[in-house]
Image (cartoon, rainbow over all chains, first blue to last red; front, side, top):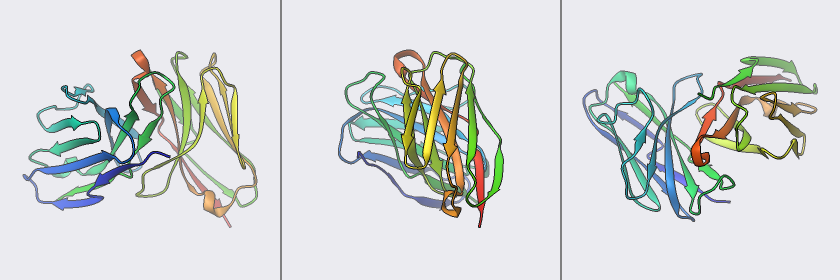
Length: 118
Length: 113
């Protein structure tokens, strides 16, 4: 099946720094990628949807200036957490939808990135 | 706004028992429903996907049902094993152009040897 990778798998940073997380679709082209956040013992919450070559659509309550999303190619999307603070510590999971559109398309999930802000 | 709820939040049963996990959603206009497994600190593993036109899917000891009109789905696990211990998430695909996947809160399952 299709594979989505994330890098890094784990990152620890100091408060105030920026962190970039990469999401790649390894063997298919993804017109749309999704970013989720998961706090401990909670479910995944959709943060934003990005389409290749256009601006991301953010869910209500998600600060677009804090969580910068770039989807520059059909196989790569990046999430940059700017000026990270301890409350941004979470598990970030990306998902990629294969080219073609439609309800029958499958969405593949990455393995997640654990961000810890000290 | 679509909301997905899972009951119970946590479940502990002895090995060998059959069990049922429940999922409910508020808007029946879904494209599909998917059950995932998540081990601690790990990503998601897709277990079963049911299209809106289907009523159930089976894979090994797992059986998932869907009653779209009532907004409910169940995941049946037969002959549970300690290796089944994980968090189980249900998720519905919804929105315009089937653009979003909304997750439930999950059920943390523990199988006692």
